[in-house]
Image (tube, rainbow, N blue to C red; front, side):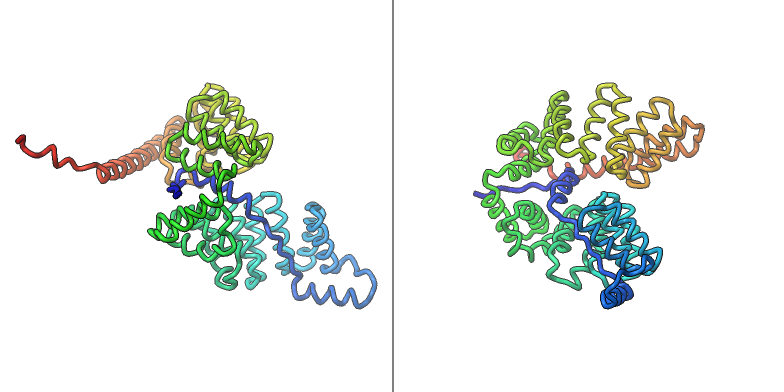
Length: 416
């Protein structure tokens, strides 16, 4: 039996979340050259090192980090960089702490500083790639991850993340080439097989696509995770009821499967069953309180019901967990624009535009806000830009539809 695995181009962000849960954060912490020497000297003296010794604070930070005491670890590593501003290892571990807290922007800033101080330390670049991946900056993750693989061709985590980044950016040829070498180690991982099959199919690699698809069916079997992924693929092709059936099969076996209730919520929402969808999102929040998209979808439901205050609260909850959610920022801008709070709306729309400059909806709403603020020329320019972008999209859709038209030569023949 062979199953055609469909691409998840429109639902890639949810697959990203599902995949990211199986990628572990790796904490790298090496003392600087001076730190190692200080550690050896302290040990040889047999007594406690003075508090001003950065190696002592580094060791305390390492111990705290390994035990999960992030506050104590941060305080210790901050002490190290105060005493030794060139300790790349301390900045690296501060970056790891920020990653553990899911503060991706701060993590990137700290890790980039560590990279400048320790450019040969591949672990720092691996964590930069992982942090960029986790905040959905796939293009920015490619450089550091590629550099790790170039130096360590057998670095499994870096290769897997790089392959996923290529796939999510629809660079399928690069994705397939990057992921295929992982087959000996990951050919029993259905998520890996799923992405590999998609990438191989779009890259035109029929042999690899066939091999990955057949192995996926063999490995997936009746596992709930397999039904979840198949449901997502079907949902992406707007077959909502069939997708719901797959999700329900997964639920029957494992009702606490990560992201399952979120996807059930999406299916019910598309089917117009809003109360049931809300229940599913609430169930997923109980299991995954930090998953921002549950709150965003609840916001959409409440907004559709005319409950703007409740919707606003949900969008704020979503952004508190993931500040880079363009749609939540746009939705807040729309709510505040309707309420006449145009200055606040403009601030939110500007933030959304910075993240997604090619979004015609943001330009349209922003144009209306600027007009309401009396900035007529800017407002007209934004509306014109939105219309131009929309026209371009419609032209592409019409061209695509034209390409798919079935010729009808039989209708042009003269009657016999």
